[in-house]
Image (tube, rainbow, N blue to C red; front, side, top):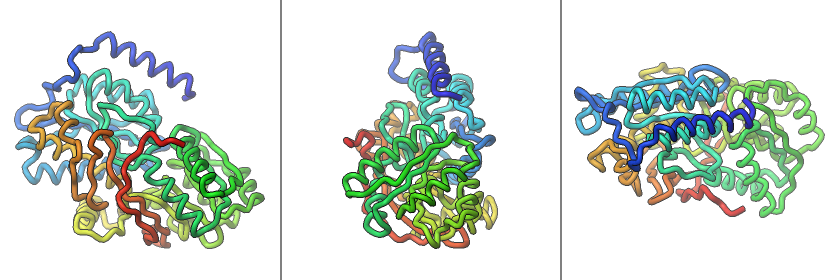
Length: 396
């Protein structure tokens, strides 16, 4: 779908929503709570090119729902999850978001993976006064009263990654990404950081989501001979990108390659042998040693199988359900405005360690962690920052 088509769709969606807008600042979803249950939506891609990264987020969110229900629910109400498939298609995301809020009357939604899908549902949540917990690292440059951002915005990962890479791997960078807002904005921040560090841009390239032919770009990379490849390719395209890099003789053994959208979960699809020795920057690794993570990993494997792995977005999806529960209990209400207000400075001992919401910008304080993929697909951490304050509107 082109940007023009997407803008047209969003405009039409907003116009329809405006026709039925309600004057109250927030709508209390009266249908969300009945007979000892509270409805919560889950909206991710279960089909299409993004499903490789997104289906498992649903698993992590459902695990949190089951744990919370087993412990008595939220204020005595068991969570009734309503799961919808965004199908890696942004208009479908908007359609399903509207259905969850208007028809199912959910109290909150855990959902979206790409920024394109979040941008598609944003006007729906704002017009219908719903509440979205967005569990994926993203570019920042956004703050909505109706969205809680539970993963790192770009400055919380790419700046730390660029600083570490320039210090440890060199200052000549080739940057490649999928062609939409997150990779474009993240690479823009990376280039600004590279300028501050006195580095050199050896080249850059962008390809549509789902693209699987990278040989011409890989030839350009080989000719440029950069110190570092900064990879912002997203979703299933990474399977082809990593396999074609390996086929061209570019591996983690002879080239510094750092990915900002590849976690343990994506590597299970890419093939651990294709990613071994490459670097990743996330806030969470399955290999983190703390009681909350050991409990999370043990429960996830017990439910879904010993061969399954966790990853950054799974962790953020799992955290999202708990953060909503804690905010509702603090507010003593499922009302969106009260849940949002109660989220200010809200803390949670999560699998990635202690996290907390910023007092007013709806984002979380986060660690940046860099690690190397092992041949088994797990990560050996080589760097960990202190908690980084979210800064979704950086001055570049």
